[in-house]
Image (cartoon, rainbow, N blue to C red; front, side):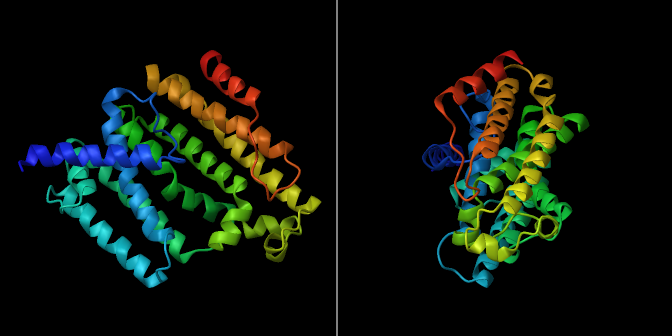
Length: 284
């Protein structure tokens, strides 16, 4: 098989993975400009596989970290245009050959996946946001680099949006993260401030104190989303609309978080919420 055929098949593999397993990848929809869809699918396939190393199955923490270390070595080889036979890395080598600056945010994602193995809670908001810097912000930065819109200001807007979306995701899944993964993404300092204990989370105590603590986190995520809002109009065409839809969706989920009565349930978007998301993205 020729190198060209291998690359074509590798891209097809990554695109199929993105279609089959797409979940919460912040910017990976049909609205993306056509030129970005293949490289974004490769980034998704890379991140999804690494995330599975950190989360799936019953491997020991040591085994997970070893897998991630091997994965990073394969990434570095791909960056040097020497990929292994994994289709993800064959495609990734082609993507990075066109833009070598993509390597750093891809390595940053691996820092976050290692943290998923080793860190179960965060003492301060600053520590939690540092995690978001590696777990969420690289995604927006990769999109901006691939599209050629990675100005300093755009990157700052993107970081605010991506970190906010990560915080929103944590607030939706408090019970799931704790019960299934033994992870707690409410800063321990804030929990102490609002007189909330870890045992309250473990026992599903839906108290007024917990509601106050969570609302404090919601306010932070809302402020960060609004700080990144100008990016939706700074970017042209379909990419700008994609960002505006993402922002609008995040704001509507925040409203759903505020109106839920039980912190341990996931917020539900109602039918008219989707109309609000679309109209806000188009007209604001």
